[in-house]
Image (cartoon, rainbow, N blue to C red):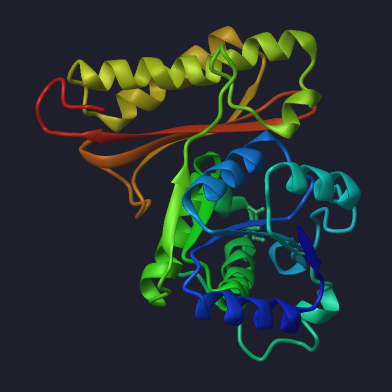
Length: 289
Ligand code: PAF
């Protein structure tokens, strides 16, 4: 594995690889790799000749009160994990190399951002779209891998790739879950023992919602109430949101039909957890996958 810190060096390598018609699988991250990232790397390794991992804590996507300086970083550990997953190139640019002067252009995301987590993070997805535009231009990937845990980010990236005609295949990768259904996250370590048991209700409530839709319920309010009631009665968590939208457009639905997402965020004492399921729902009863 080669660690590359200079953008220009990465571009020289990529041009050479492209001239040999190599397919390039790209996993962009902010480092402090966890199991979710490793799943993306494994998938990229299976499907491409070359795997590029980027580690860059992107200041543009942090709000003024957010934790850019304290965001966890452990490059040595990340480097060994990347090596174990068979990464070919680890792109690790500095902020000065990525943003050498105040940007004259930035990407503004106009849709899909004022709901779910984006509602409370104005400008966050503009920062994500801007850095990804730069990274896509540097790495020129054949395929780019993103976890469905952050389904809103996947929706924004889908819009970016489509609207800006990036010749990249977006590969959304399924959420990795524990045996009891709890979505894996590095944040789960901040759950108290009792909260860890309660947190299982997040996926249980999403599964109950899916079952209810499968049996014929198509009213979004009925489904969000069902989920909220389960979370309130089985956990001490405070609900941040329980929402249903079309996917990936993230538009409100009068009736649950088509591809839709049910997404939830719940605050426990020291950590806020998110989870979601994406369903294909037809008009007919029983028509949910
Ligand atoms: O999901 C992340 O880690 C970041 O938002 C990303 C996609 C690497 C852009 O900085």
